[in-house]
Image 1 (tube, rainbow, N blue to C red):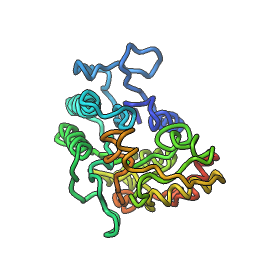
Image 2 (image 1 turned 30 degrees about the vertical axis):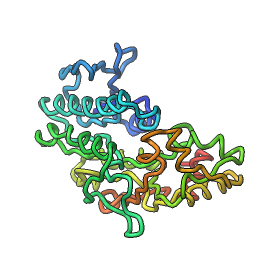
Image 3 (image 1 turned 180 degrees about the vertical axis):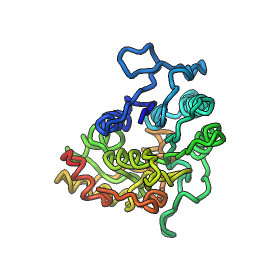
Image 4 (image 1 turned 30 degrees about the horizontal axis):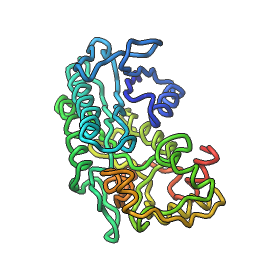
Length: 309
């Protein structure tokens, strides 16, 4: 397949692109600068510029671009950046793909479990993709983000919106930021620790994207469209995650970071990010026959920290 990828330099994209090329696919990446290497295509989402001629013959697109949710305090300016970096890019790509002839068969478009709001699942059990959107800035952002892919849906392209949970990787994302403290025995739970964490290893995330990408007639992944929870089947509380990470590193983890301290340090991201409780199930994936290689947190963390597949 000929596949175009946005956000190729991010945590997920930097693992996905080599994996796709190892699978034998021709991968081209969209970059926001003049191309410097074969396989690069320049685009300018701010100016609304993406040359349709550069995408002619593309079989699939994977859209992962977007400013980091937890990279900065949520000032008014950065909230605007979070929206434009997701919604404008998705709308431009979806419209361009919809205008191609022939059109690509599938668009895997980034999304997030922020859709479900700050209190999702809990004691009632995990929620699947049929749950309605929650409240808050992130929920509204994700709802508009997913809607921006509508031109591709209207054109008959199979669209999967990738509601990604916390991606566990030793070299990036939330886990990498926690590791130094935990390695020094200074790790601990956040707030009450009772909030649910829906997570997935980077390895399983990439495997899931390859599963969804496969569009041959008899491929299980080709039956999936709409929202897809990219989370492992066994969510855990923050307290359970803290114990598992400390155990994997053979370190104590007695600290407690109070809710008020998180609010002061992180602003709006504290309540809608690290303190949000989201207990979710990957129903779309498991119903289609996808099997996780790291479904449980203890083995998953050991695998991630030792870089075993």
